[in-house]
Length: 396
Image (cartoon, rainbow, N blue to C red):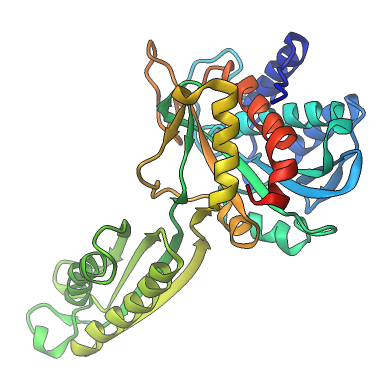
């Protein structure tokens, strides 16, 4: 196996890049300065690139034999509406916006991978498409790029993505066969009753009473509609209803989310939730309308692509650095849209240090040690050069 290390010079450049990105975060679909900065870096490296959508970028690196396999690698570039509290000297200068999910790290790692693969393009066959994706924290960003043809011309054979992970020791690689993240769909339940005086409730239809019955019944979707060993979430996060203590409420609005790790359960939850709400409201003489918004699909890793990354990580860092994740995260990532179409794997890169408290993703004090950057670059680069360039054809 050829091991491609990150030079000190490149590492120093990547640290500068990461700190600039962290200091200038931008929200989903508003990553204009981020996009311009990425293209500036690529131009300084004399690496051609393509723009896609308003703030998306992809780089095609063509090997010595164009007819080989076509590998995709994706990094997300957007930030979150969070006020940073890390105290870092390169903290966000944009009020209320922060890279609290490690996307600055993901982007930097992919830029380092682009640099390495471009420099070594005569050492592999086929092509690699490195995708800098906007809007991961919003809805449908990955699907938008797919609709614009990011997986085509020619068709991509396999996809890779990573996510920094504060729940694993620094430098470990977390792999998961099958589902690694859940779907995430949002819904709004509008319950209509009939207003009246609280002294004469028999003349009214209480939307609050209907809502409490629906709230209790929703829990049965978790316990009765799916395999008991399969994780499922049905959550109500917002309730709005009623106008005064002595008035029977004629309207209540519930807002929530469902999460599942299989496509079958995801669809079943949707249909059963709608049926349940409508039937309960009707039984009380009211009406419930469910507005369901399909969000991110689950990320389901392909076995053979996952195996190639695992084997590459073992050869690079040793078996002690590879962790088999026991269960999927109920968080979501729109990389699932890619994985629905192309055999893919999405893995975790551990960032937890023994001597320092690790804050979770989306926390205002989230940060990571920059020594993780060359590890990500090395794993992506070596996996492409030594494994996927032949594994796509052999299916390992």
